Length: 157
Image: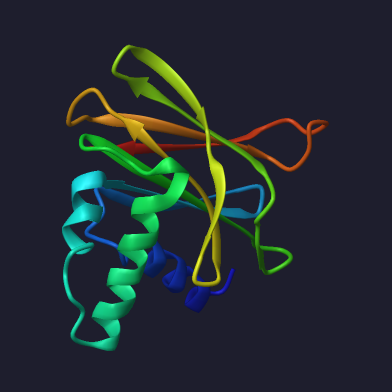
């Protein structure tokens, strides 16, 4: 993935609101971007009437994220994973992506849903976290059932 695309991906992760976390790591020539936003951060931007083109885009992203995956609820967080194939120079839009973390009642594994917004592809889901953290999120992904999962670990304060 070239530098400009990397910046665009991080902008996509951060455009909705200030992230709790946004990190990028590489495994087996796949660049994996991980981001997490609170429901409250997303909602803060939904009622704002946009005055500029940038604010309009920000508003659109917040509104779309608020409706994804059946919508979030107060106290939930939206996890976003974006995967790029470095060798092929393309965004991955079809994969089995899962995230494991310690949730309210112990370890949880969730399957992320494919999502697209304004030409960007990624995988996401709303989750409930037990407290402010710190957290370790293990992202697992594969492209077929015959393949082993690749793993990337993110520590979030």
